[in-house]
Length: 270
Image (cartoon, rainbow, N blue to C red; front, side, top):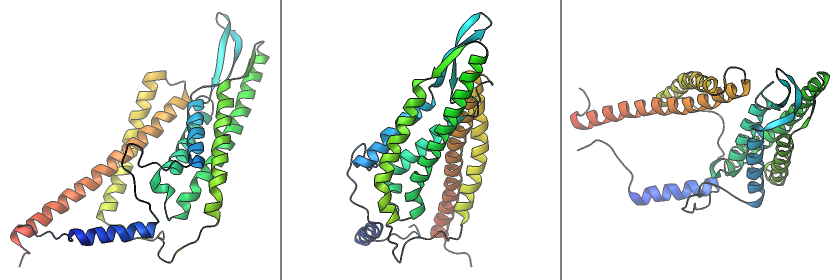
């Protein structure tokens, strides 16, 4: 017989009900999109984020300039230069997920609720910097005798950011009029072995995933397109961090489970 102990089903249901009431959660409907909270304002943010992500992969300026074979078609992408397109993709993805995913959208941690507004501001600043870089690239083409203009990708990015800002502004009063409760969580805690294992595994995974992502980016576009390499490093690092953290906590859980089973079979040592 195992030495493990579990609460009766009625007690577990009561604990779950009290947790739902404290977190102000609503019953989650089953279905493919049950994890999403799609009010009109939040859906507007999601659509704007998707538009900005797509625009980050598109050309931001295009034209014609002298090349080896005469005048050739040229373009400037957000993935080149300072990599503004990479930043725009990441902050838009973060703003969209934090706004429509049910867990952060209903969080009792105020920082989580206000973070999408911060990311939208960063997206707007990134767009301004990308607009300036696009104009500088067009001016460089014109100095060489060519011509150019702002591409639809940059305007699509601006429209997406405007939609994200509109939806965030509608949601912002609820964050500003925040009412703390006595039992709200605070950022104080004592890390355990599982937390340390997740941190170490995630750190190692970030490095390994970033290296793998960079290798994939270079194999796809070569070392000249810095934005693709940066995207490979970022998403590779994120994937590596998740995999490393999962591996770390899984190992700790299995070791603890094996120790618990041993104690249940043989009892404590004298």
